[in-house]
Image (cartoon, rainbow, N blue to C red; front, side):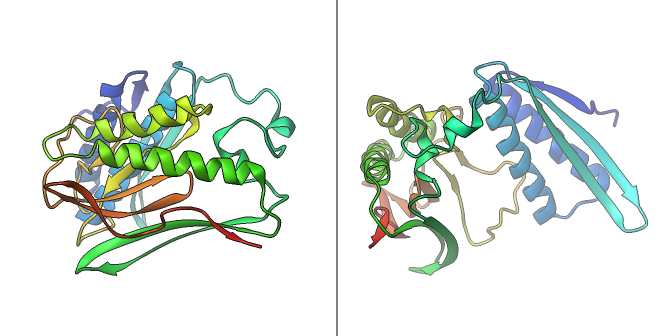
Length: 249
């Protein structure tokens, strides 16, 4: 199959196109299900970032199949055309009005993300802990994270588009004075085979046209608060996870 190796990404539909291209290349290269699923996940992350972090400029994904004595591989290069960071030093200052300014060096926050089993479901947990004097910036981020998580969960009713959850969560982030454009996705689907072994993984992003169904399990996270939820008839139910940032003084 004669497949293109360069793909322009400047619209939501292009992320799905890139994912399908990666899947086709993986089939050509003889990848197994798990590796192909991982490649599709990487491409989705790269494509989504090109849309969210470039001010609408987008960019290009370059795919280069590799063949050698050690086996086959797929090199994926993401080239963005965004404006860049005008003042990196200013962005690292505590209190700078960006979403992740709370990850400053002064108050020593530490993040952990781990997986296990809860109620016979595969689960993942995200937690950020602040050690030492409590930062006002961290407290503010904690308030925004809890409010945004609650809004996303409220939108997670069976039959509704998956994208409604991220749109609701990020709307709260915006209302509380922060730009959600620098955030990663609100979540992703997980299950017994995680890491994903499918080629079209479920992503809880605004651009997703997937529909929530009872029995789905989702890893949802915003600003260091996150856990695994089961979709029930009444909405997402927490299986395991962090409800807020942890302060250790």
